[in-house]
Image (cartoon, rainbow, N blue to C red; front, side, top):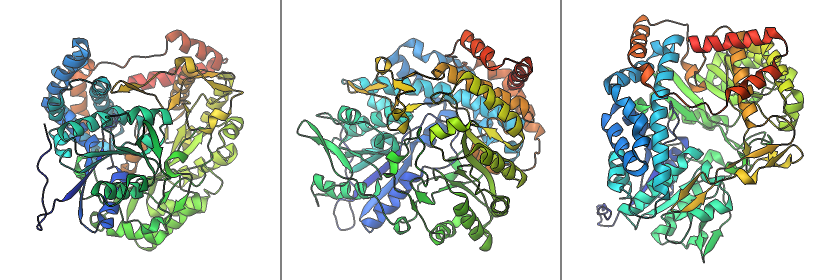
Amino acid sequence: MGGAQPRKTATGKKAFRVALVFPPTMEFPTATPPLGIAYLKSFISEAFDGRVSVSCRDLNVSFQNRMFLDSGVRRTLRGLCKDVLGASAAKDLSKLRKIPVEEVSALLASQNKYKTFRDDWAYREGLTLLTKYADVFHSAFNRLSEALCQLTGDIPFEKLDGLFAGQLSNLARHDVVGMSALYATQLPVGLLMAKAVKHFNPKASVLLGGAAFSQMSERDCKALLFPGSPIDGICDGEGEVTLREFCRFVLGDIKREAVPGLIYAHDGGLARTLPEIVKRVDELPFPDFDDMDFSAYHAPAPVYPIQTARGCSWNKCSFCDYNCNYDSKYRPRSIDNIMEELKARAPLQKGRAYLSFDDSEIPARRAKNIAERLIGEGFSARYFFLARPTKDFTKEILITLKESGCKVICFGVESFNQRIIDLERKGTRVKEARKALKATHKAGIDAYCLYFTGFPTQTAEDIGLEIKALVKNAPYISNLANASFVLLQNSAALELSDYVEVDWSRYEPAFYFCGNPIYPRHFPYIMREGMNGDEAETAMEIIHNSYLAFSSGLRRFGRPEYHQIFLGPSKPDKKARRDMAAFKASHAKRFPSANDSISLDTKLQMVERIFPHPSYLKSYVAGICLAHEH
């Protein structure tokens, strides 16, 4: 099937059309639109002075909502899974047939109301059920995408197009289709969509970009850019300049080798041009969200993502590979420029603005400068941001942040063990972190702690010390993130070869693209000193349950950081609770439960090593009981 006839301008010339796509992420809930493609749209529109038509497609939120609200999606996906993967793959989806879509829709609607957000019980129960529902779809959809990516023969593109409500054939009407993937989970479906675009219109040019592709190895790039591949190029690093020049190449204005930051197939191998970053970020046009329907996102009011800088001001953490995205260059915007963007948002000029600061971290003094401008200009906002817990978060600064509307600070605590923090190159001190958490709590701001276990050399005995620290700090922590160590292929943790090494015997492809292996960006590893992967996951589970036991019940448990900005005084919604209880009684047992990959014996052995004293074990068991009871 060929592409549709190109649209023409008033002068009779073909209109050059660009589509920027954010594929499904397999994560729920989604509160904000993707910032990357919104920046790209405004940049390209300005660069070509309106001569190029640019549109943004957030297929992540649109697919999620159709998954919840359209029973046809369920039927189509189940049919595709049965045809491609076999009857057993459609089994879980068949179980969901017993749950009326109308009730799931009502549940989703209730979760987007202020009353439910302020009722911890109703919010938690609803989010748990919806997440289980979404996980069933995502698991089946991801398996299907991986299987279809592997095929080199006939693929049911028309049925796949129906799953996306005709969006794939519509994308094929564009001259350039840019796929922007932020997470590795977007890769299979993003690549499958690229294949679909070329199926419907072989003349369309497909450019891949985003953090997930910037972090790819040379081997994976070769696997994507084989002879006859539907991929025309991969953007290496920031996308603005690369996309602009790639469009000029497609238009015939320049040669392909003149496009900066481009990886492409050449003479049986790869060619790579030097990336070009935007040095003066104040000169970038503000992101264009005109194509985004904010009412489609999972929050009771629009949440606007905003970036105050590109790159990371610290950029030294050994477990992180963020430096791959922005070429390690930290470029802050001026406060004037930030305020201009906020004022330019028409929906923000009336009432209160809800903001998600999407920087990798904002230092305390810069956060204070932004807060003072918000206060000085009378800008009513509620917002959160990420930061390292340094001594700069003083009482005075935190009071200013609170007054400006800061509701949550996501602190990258990572550990309460100074030896581990030093190995992680966090540049923070445990004592200073504790003071920052306490001062944040006293200022009336929620402290959301980013935290993980299993960094090289961390032992079960270290976990016992972490739990003791949590006993002291739990009253000041509103929520504790749940994660364990991952050895990333572009991180400095690979330099810790005395403690951890890559286990190449277990490093296998994540999936195949047209028969070519695509590998994950994280490595399986052998821990020379410290806990292995299963032990680290068990330790994190133990820490989290201990935190629940030592903190005041389950307040804010399971609430994403960007949802905490809507919290106010607790106002239980009795009707929401009744509806939730009725839904659980009727349907909750029919949700397929997730498989536990860690054996019970492993957990028991870890518990015995961590809890030499029965009082700690008693608290841990109490946390488990609370989690299951609620």
